[in-house]
Length: 320
Ligand SMILES: NC(=O)c1ccc[n+]([C@@H]2O[C@H](COP(=O)([O-])OP(=O)(O)OC[C@H]3O[C@@H](n4cnc5c(N)ncnc54)[C@H](OP(=O)(O)O)[C@@H]3O)[C@@H](O)[C@H]2O)c1
Ligand SMILES: *[C@@H]1O[C@H](CO)[C@@H](O)[C@H](O)[C@H]1NC(C)=O
Image 1 (cartoon, rainbow, N blue to C red):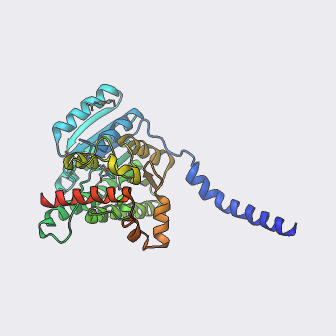
Image 2: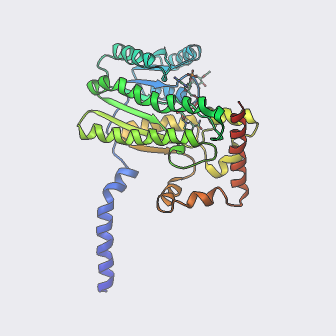
Image 3: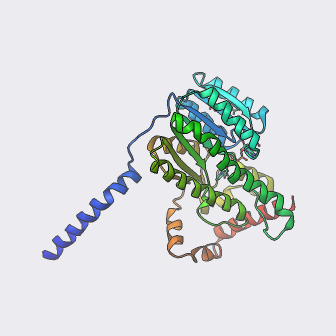
């Protein structure tokens, strides 16, 4: 009897201690609005960025700047958003995140266009190349991924922060599951996404510590079907993504777009977007770092298919 009440007491104490983190993880209160505010989405000419722009418009963003390098595609995206969400004012701005002059020009244009409207910056533009790291011909691709995914994202954030701090707002960085765990041939890309996650978490801490009204969020999709870079790659090598998503899980561009809105509304520091839960794998890896040595070597058909897909993409992209 005494033993039971002791256990009960421990149970009650544990629940009380865990209630706060559990509540904030599974039923967080809504603390921000999207409607009537302003947003900038980079990499919004194709793939996931297009969907993020559409969903922000559907949520009632009043002014939306979409940006990328291809102006024609941006104009088409802007026209379609205007057609479906006429209340949102859409501006298509050609800009290359890897060029310093383009970044400062974009920040100036946006500051002028938005005035004091609370603003969300969605850092979505990114590129991916699978590489055999020993190839000397890989150098331009290594630099391109670092320049766009890390240097571009961090500097653009730096360019926007003065106006974001004044108006209040959000920064949503699109990282990847590749920023949480290793893959095959994804070496440099994964490094850039680990960097994005580290930058996001630290900038969030900085803003909170200095009581500045800018919240930072990181959204991490796994393999994305229907559009985007992984889907393009599957089509190029003739091995459909379906051959690997049974093991790795998948999501659609709309899921990442919805996660961006959810991250803002519920102030999530991080959101993983994938049909299968992957956090147990990440947790196991944190405790047993040798875990991934075995994962990729398991003699299972689904693992072999996954490795074959990644090998084929790596060979294909290394030849280009
Ligand atoms: N698809 C996936 O499976 C997946 C999974 C996890 C994470 N992600 C991440 O999600 C984000 C979007 O990827 P996606 O799949 O939608 O790729 P995507 O279809 O290749 O689109 C990439 C977008 O970024 C733009 N972009 C590329 N380089 C740029 C530059 N230098 N300056 C400005 N814009 C640039 C592209 O437009 P322009 O070429 O016109 O400039 C395009 O709009 C990326 O950060 C990616 O790493 C994707
Ligand atoms: C235009 O936008 C609508 C609504 O978001 C979407 O269903 C449709 O696929 C888009 N069309 C093109 C060509 O992107």
